[in-house]
Length: 272
Image 1 (cartoon, rainbow, N blue to C red):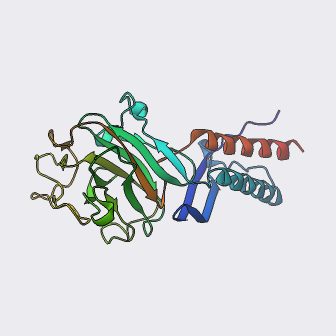
Image 2 (cartoon, helix red, strand yellow):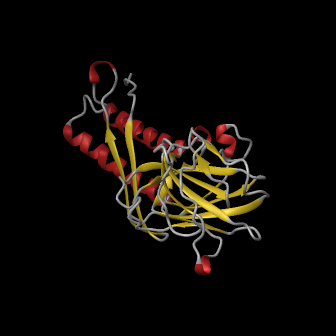
Image 3 (cartoon, rainbow, N blue to C red):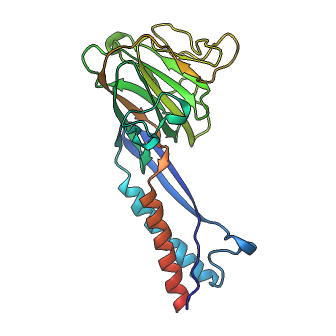
């Protein structure tokens, strides 16, 4: 009887994008130690057998990465946090995007005067950007960028020029371009004049129409606590075009497939 091995892998995706064209796509699998006694999943296998298994896993990982190589769209799905199909407007109720590969677009819809928050992972801050698009009618948006813990990073109201009422956090801005790759962040979108406030009720960001602006709350508290009750009335569809990002949560089925593949390979080697 072959002993069942429990498998745990560090799953890391790096997607460096130029627009929607992947220029670098790497998926790394690193075997970890097991529980009691800190035994390795490859215990009992010769070094050459371990190498063969890892090479096959690498090929499998490339196949999985290829499946996600095409840029993809996330559709607002607040059901993941019990919000009945509407992305939440608080740190704990953000819509957790889930999947594998580059995430290029988010689509959603404002319900009355709400704000919507999405969690994404930024894989390359050098090219990170977020731009509202596909707006219904005369919809006028605002974009806000927060850390995963809700600390304000940057905001934009209007692109200006040909962009009009659209909002954009453009690539290379000094407020975020040098942050650490692989970071989970929150992207919030609201209708004009519905602004985020801290626990003291102060505005987190300044409120000019143009430019990308960092937080400037008077008391130095930049953590999201609430939104203006007024402003941004009415419903409407919107999109957010993204670069340099992937999903906040890896798709569970992909991780399960990799783990199952590894178990099969180990069992076959041990049975010989």
